[in-house]
Length: 169
Length: 280
Image 1: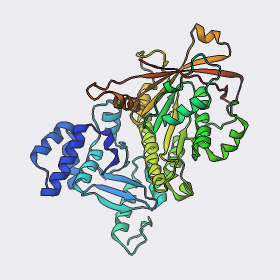
Image 2 (image 1 turned 60 degrees about the vertical axis):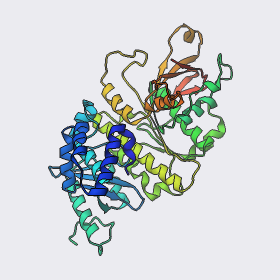
Image 3 (image 1 turned 135 degrees about the vertical axis):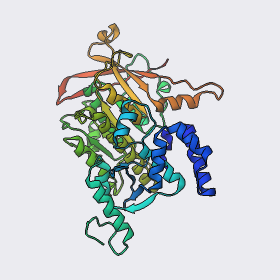
Image 4 (image 1 turned 120 degrees about the vertical axis):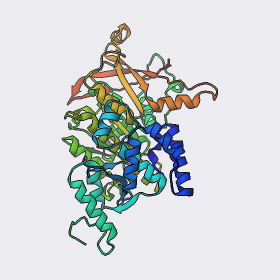
């Protein structure tokens, strides 16, 4: 499970635990959990569920053991988020969470929590240097290319997994 | 992180102080990240003392990020402390992008072997956060620092290192006068609010300009206010179960004997810290 749960209020933590339990047993999230999800997280709950449906969350790992999440937003932009604390380079996080302090998190981070609870996070590997680059950069158009390459590498075992060379495999 | 700072204050505490009660020093919070807010000269001296103390007392590997080169060290350091400087890696990124890259690469094997750093220090965060959109940039930097520390803690744990966990210590100069709480918000306040999200303990340094302080001559008295969720957690944990946890500010009074010579932007301290703790 995510280490960054310490940043969530207890009610949200309990909600994710209930979702995890329910999804493990029935492979769905019942209405009596969707309603509180909407109540706690507001309009971004529905948007996050949409991201979950589209398998937009990928957990990247590097040989050093470092991990990070990458979420493909609705517009196709890729957002790199951290494993142990809340940060997302999206405009909604900057405005709603940081500036106005009106929300706990953005739809991308909520999608990460939901994917982790439901066990539907995609997995991919990158090299240590690529991980460093991803962690230090804010969202940029080339991230999409990196992500595509990562997906190709991950799905193509004959290619060295640490290679980010965008040649087709 | 607060345990290192407490150690700094204990190590350099005044032997001629008016009040000396070590048991009254703040309990070491479990928080692994701390932010020093105050004048850059005094903050940098405390950061350097923390780096040297961590390297000497706890055998930690320390990495010290600063935009401006360190040209002098606190004069109060015993000579053998200077031998410990090789345990401290000084790095001088020029921009926030360079700082982000260097922090992000700390997980790479070149930085973690034979042992990873267990104290990451960033001097004068505000010097890196001058571009537009600095709130988001500040959040990115702080989140990266905390995530990196969490990862390095995991590595240190795997190595069964006594230097675990990895801690983060940074300084920030706020435009808000720490003595005027509740005053008008300054331009740096939004950034400080962001920093408070990620740093669990904040030490606000406030120089006492009162009569007693003036009468002390070369010595300066600093009030250090402790705040943040890390402090609150400790206070809450110590409360009785049926007593609601009340967020408490804690303060230290620190007496500093200042060396009149100030070199290279680093205020030399004949550092004699005097601790007295007030909980109010």
